[in-house]
Image (cartoon, rainbow, N blue to C red):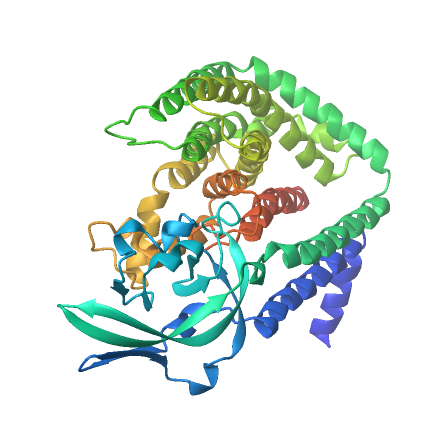
Length: 492
């Protein structure tokens, strides 16, 4: 009963945010239903089916079959990631293969009629498509494929000997391939509406909301004016401006000429790389500007004057976070625009969506790092501790993250001893999922996500929708944590 009474008491204390908490619970149920829907209606592990394939060779006969005899002539809807590129007619029927050569991996004998077909790789599973997929689907997109296992007989020559091939092949028609995002958007749309309703009704419960927002605006403007005049902001802002503009110009030039350090640079890759450099410098500036905001208030004894006003603790934290974000975000936005301009003029124009994501999510990234530093600033008891905490956070997220991921990958048994282990699928999947714990990696992910035509893509093991969700969850969680720490300190 004690636990029940405590839970009820805590629920009542969160009266303002009850609608939002209910909305989050409903969203969780919808997300589970989303997962269950795909598990029930599709085969979500095509590779496990593909690995059931057996190959036997005896005399002049080769047989490729599946251990599960019930699969033959059966139609299965598979859901997975397209892993082959490009999807053109001659991706299966090339000039070199048009003379009747046998490809053991695909289980086919290539001939002239292959030019009218396409071969896709769905999570490692090969599916023959009866038609051209030119410009219809792209690498890393998540799709569903309605495929049927059929048996085909071929004949090919090996070492001047005629070989008969009986092969079981998964085949599909062009209309049998659809974007998984077409269904996902229904679930995402419902979740967005539920969240918006929960937030709306929670905000309606906030007492004197308009007055609190006015206080937040005044605090934000005060922090903004004070921050712009700070010598550290002038120095850090100048460094940020010169660095981002210079990197934009360099990355544009690298689209035409390779570099011994950065190598060749594609149009899409250049804006993702620019977002990486933006995070390194932008996070440093965000942490540097907000490093001692609460410590300064304690030293100057101005916090008591602020608390004497009828202001909610949440309003104070929100106002400071918004003001410090404007201090860094407005100059950063200008530098990003100029850097993007030089990158485009020196090279090629990336997708419009990626440029929007680069600018918009850059501001969210800065807000995230500001609120993250506010958590550290509130927790620190001295000025030296504040600096050490902030510097450590920046070093971790911006510089030593890759080394930390490699160390953790080694601990859990991922093989990193190969020369090109960075391209190992297991390592890529682990590194991408760990990247969800780093706001800088998430920023690069969402910029890369918007270089595609849909969010139904796989970002080396992380679904596009999860990266998009994470980029919004990070600042919300940091802001909530900073508010909780501040309220606890004031009570203490």
